[in-house]
Amino acid sequence: MKPVVVRPMPKDGSNSYGDEQLAAILKRAAQLQQEAGEPDAQLDLAQIEQIACEVGIDPLFVRQAASELSSQTGSSASQPFLGGPTACTLQQSVAGVLVGEDFEPLLEEIRHTLNDTGHLGSGAGHPPGWRFEFRFFNWGGMSFESGRRRAAERSLVWHSSIALSGRDICVRIYSQNGTTTVRVEEQFTSLAGSLYVGLAGGLGLGLAVLSFTFGIAFFDALLPSLLLAALSLGGCYLLARTLYRSNVRRRRQQLQQLFGRLLQQVRQTLNIA
Image (cartoon, rainbow, N blue to C red; front, top):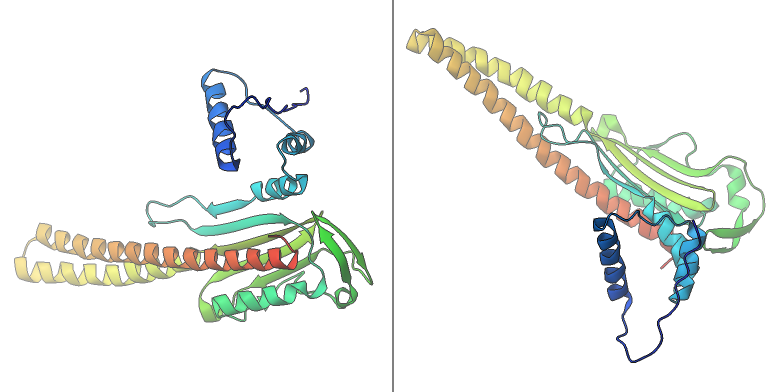
């Protein structure tokens, strides 16, 4: 595809537009092009940077926006039977690399927000060599460092204490190829098991048996007894489903809060506004 060159319009007294209006115009123009059946424009990063320069945008911010655009934020598909997803994953990458003790405040933030000391997994923390690294500058995903280095990726891997908290959370923060990625994820399978197996299964079946027995003794008929048993079992299922949805919503909110704080801390360390 030929490079796209944006030439400024002549100053003939026409209207001028701010950043928000420019973005709205370009978005609407793309929609009109799609409605007209025209193929979408495919540009590489260099071409986008050229366009940004034409309209006065620093290419540094273009590269930063491109790295953030590749972020993944969301949950697994909602399960109708369970009433919610079985996992939640939040991930985003920013330009720049973390060095040595930059991981220490991130670890403290994880433990403080989740109120769980947890444990470090493979690749967690920083090997002894990292303590001798110094950053002279870190700008736009480029850095110049000095001191002892390790070939392994700089990373922090933290796991929750499942036995104590009952939650299966994993936080990964790693720097490679000029970017730092923050990933927070939690599996809700243990929560689903405890509610649906313990509450809907165990308690529900127990109440169903009692209801059936009561129905036989009181009504002396099979159909009303089966109806009472079904209502008891269904009521426990609905209770478990409600509790599952409520717990998943609360946990996702906490993960989003942690994710936002970690991203903010990484940005501050990398001197990104």
